[in-house]
Length: 309
Length: 207
Image (cartoon, rainbow over all chains, first blue to last red; front, side):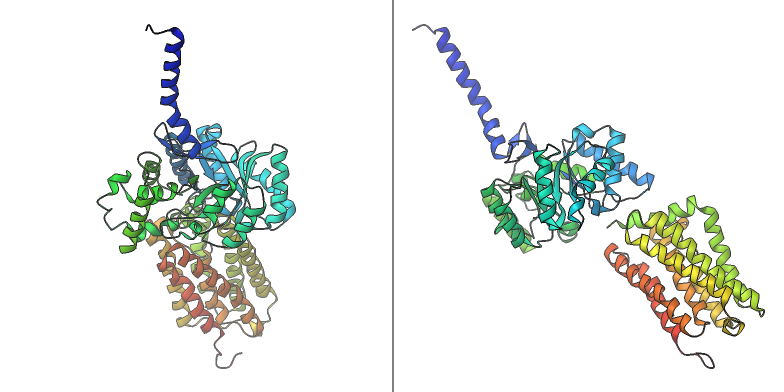
């Protein structure tokens, strides 16, 4: 039977859909797209590279021009290697100003997913502080505004919801760290329309697995992870030890990739925001954005390995 | 919070940019003990006033100008240093002759010399650059610690008032250095606590 044009087009279309479907499906579940791991924000379906950049301590360099130049190189490396999310806060001293200077030097304002926090006990200062941060970053509005460490969260969240409805911000969220106030945060997640939470989660600090991560999945809330290296403590404890012989199976060439892949391989995690002041370390961090991710069994193996060290 | 490198570079940057003030700090460190050991009342009043000037400089230049941008409590401490300096200047002008400290004995000169000569090197050593010296009149640790040598010679309630800020600063510094993981810098706050006890210790013939 001769091949009709209709049949040819149907077969070709089916083959094309079959080739494209894995990427589309993987994107929906927050996995690898074009070789780069991306997290999917459940409220919109937007996907973001799974490794971002924190700025706590690392970008607080005041008016030190030599260090500002050096941090600009770190940011440039981050962006060139596919990074997008930058997370800051007014609590981080001069970090907001240094981020702004670095972005201006690189002309990179349109290359980032900008996230900062509202950090004031005065519930009426939400917009004012957001505006100040916009000025310091040199951006016209943030992608994500978060209430920092639940400080005056009721007042700030109410204003943030209004700001989001008015188009002044794309996403809103709440942060905590060091495993603090998880119970209170869970209550907020269950009752408020959050796009994001930011929590501490790493190989040693896994309390979030009990309640917050499953709740985030259930409620369709994106998870931004801080302290993926426990503030550098994971390196101090384990860097002198050898990687496990099976590290290559999960695409890990160094401890930074080992720690970060553990974090971003959790199905509830959208992206992690490690902080660094060194270009070489940024390169290592961004290495986690490609290659194999551990599955559930391999994640347990990672936990067991460091527990024995 | 900030990193150790950022903190240590504050001293390098300040000494480089404010080199004239750094030199002034060195001059004050030499002039104050010289004046304080003179027999006349006017030189000894000048010693107290110049110590006040050192506090004002340290508060305005280092604490408010350099440190506060990375550590916001430093701004409050900066103004506290300015207030301490103003208090010392006012005391120098208003103090009765009987209230002036006696001429510094050799022991007090030596203690002052050790403080202003040794403490500045802790930051320079950690930075690996002599230009990072924490000089008297600019670095708050050295300024606060050295001032206690002068306080030792004062009498009455003024002694108790003037030890308050150095002691609180020493506590703040200690906590900061622990957080930064710079144990060598603990020399200054520990010395300040010891000097505070010494400054308040009852002296024979004077309360």
